[in-house]
Image: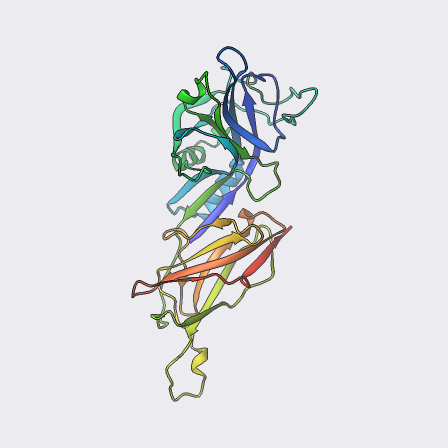
Length: 339
């Protein structure tokens, strides 16, 4: 039931045609092949993203606590000019590099910082031949969501080798001389909810309770300890209190409407940006499972994986024993992350 996001400490893109120009502060990361004609103005661009090794080491050691986890590299599409199918490759960078302060529109151009030619032994970047990949077809979501669990494990075991990831088009696209294809993604300098990120997910859910389980869709659920604001960096456990809408009558000194029941173990949470309605963390049957103890159902959210000064809405769904799925999308279940 755990999802933890780590944002970059630096990113940029490099260009073979603009080989001495730095783009370290540009709002866009280009992974493109420009082919305006077959002899001139051919340009290949590749993106570089690096994440804090200290953050990765700390989360894996102290937060995940040895549990099995998955790690995904995520980038969000700003614009594209694409063939019907293509593959984006991710390679482990093997040389240290500096982000720089340049932008594509700079006049004169900024040359200080990482470029196509520098600091590499081979122009275009020094990187390991092993590729992590994600393939796309015409109907695919064009955001990058690439499994790099093996790479993150390598960085964890070899912390001094973490120089980030280089993203490029496949050789068939980069060598094309007749058509332009590629992707433009939001960088860390866009100041939006779409910066590159590593998303770490693991299952630390626990379901052990003496509470009676909800079996009908006629139930009410509230987040009993919801707060309006959370400082960034906070880790908070949300409690779900559930009861039957129409409880059976009984002879008791307390109201039957106060009897807390348990949502089944097939209950999951999700999170979306309240303004854009973009899903930030989607329902996942492994990694966003809701736990339960003898008090109530509960789940944990790590606020340092969320952009501050924004409002987020909590959603949850449960799959009942009869196979029926109930989704709770209540606009009042929101909070703000503050600096």
